[in-house]
Image (cartoon, rainbow, N blue to C red; front, side):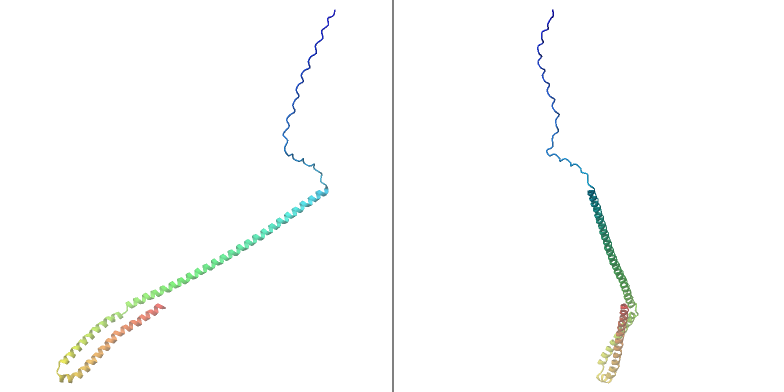
Amino acid sequence: MSHTQPPTPPQPPAPASPATPPPPQPPQPRFQAPEPPVPMQPSTAALSSMEQSIHKSIRVAQEVADEVRLNAKKEAELIVQEAEKNADRIINEALQKARAVHSELIDLRQKATVYRARFRTLVQSHLDILENSDWESLEELEAGLEEAGQQLDQYAEHSSDSMEQPEDYHHTHLGQHQDVYGQQLEDVEHHYLDEVDEPRRELRRTSRKMKRKAMF
């Protein structure tokens, strides 16, 4: 006899496994950059136009560079010319000032030479006056004056003696005494005046000569 197995009870369904979460997406920017346009193959005409534009730009740049170079050269030449003019002017002014100073120096030397010569002549003239022999004549003049004074005293004494003599004698010899003593007085007076005036005149002549020498 066969043994029948009892039927197995139905198994409850297995719980479904949870779904795997998708990976996190990077944050989207607030403003998305536009996608670059798809490059287009330029045409031959466009390339030729671009080439002409480039050549034209190069020519313009070359012309501008040449013009700038030419202007800079002209400006440099003007600056050099102006500097040369200023240098010539400064040199000429310096030469003129040097000539003026040299001329003034020569003039001052000449004036100093003339002044020294005149001063030397003036000093020499004064030395000549001091060493002149006229000073000795002044001593002789002084001696002559003393002698003339003595003669005048003698004349005065004779005059007083004649006044004391008798009247007849006075009348008799008065004219003779007056004539004699009058002549003596005139001789003494002329001699005195000549001796006084002659040294003075000689000193004046000598002084005038020395002054003229000092002036020349």
